[in-house]
Each structure stands twice: as structure tokens, then as C-alpha cells.
Image (tube, rainbow, N blue to C red):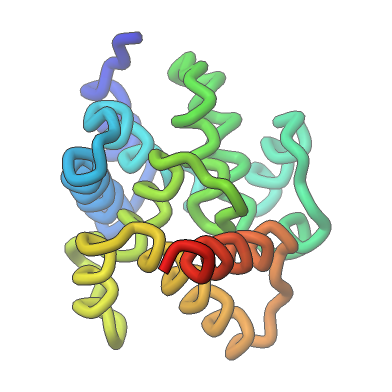
Length: 193
């Protein structure tokens, strides 16, 4: 399926802050590189990375409205945590706004913040691409980038651990799908040393 990436970029430029727009471009570029490294479709990866934060700067009320309309299964922890709504809202929004029907792209947007067990390769790429994009500068980002380009399963386990630790430090709630994702990759690495 052909997607008009020019109109997608135009929409993002008009509706996101300059910083968020640049982040979206960086994640898209990172996802394309990761797709080439791990044998995924680079165009799909670029689109999913580009659109992953499309609803991030919408009002809380609008995000929640989109989530409730989406028909996606959403847990209580996601509904209670404002910063988690944009992925779910975004997946629904791009389906309606840009006629994106590819379930892998939609799931990549929907799960890019919380993750889950058994993620597709594209979902993994967007999850990691968001974490290691060019402008990221958190402590240990260089280590995370190295792992991301060395072993994707190890990178996923590390990314889940990083995410969970960050939420615990802030005293937030952790969706079950995030815990299941961490357990999935931990077991995967134990069973395949």
C-alpha cells in the first residue's frame, strides 16, 4: 500500500511543536536504519516511526476521546496515565486520518510506549527507535544504542527494564502488558543464551 508521507510530514509540522516534529523525524530515520539492520520493511518502519507521537500534544480530553472510540483493548493503568494515552489515540487517529490499515503499523504506534509480550519485529523497531533516536541524551543512551544494534532481544529486555525503573522512580503505575513484555524477553534470553 502506498502512503503519502509528504502529507503526513506536513500534518505533523502543522500540529506538533518544532521539538516534537524533529523527534518524529529522528525516530522515523532511526526506524528505517533498524529495519534495514533487522530485515523489516524500511518504508513501513519509517511511517510507523514518523507517526508514533502524532497525538502526543493533543489535549488530554481529545486523546481520551480517541482512545475510547478506538475499540482497542485498554487497561486501567493506561487510562489513568496521561502519558500513555497518545499511543492508543495515535493508532486510531492515523487509521482514520491517513487510512492506515496495516495492523503492524497500527500496533507499532499503539504499543510504542508500553510494549507487550510477543511484539512483532516492526513493533520492536519502533519501541527501540523512539528510545535511541538522535536527540536522546539520557544517561546510558550510548550503551542502549550499542545494544540496539547488536542484539534486538537483549535491547528489548534492557528497554523494558529502563522503562519500568523510570516509572517506579516517578511512583507511577505499570500496565500489565509492560510487565508481560519484560518477562517475555527475559525468558527468551534465558531459554536462548
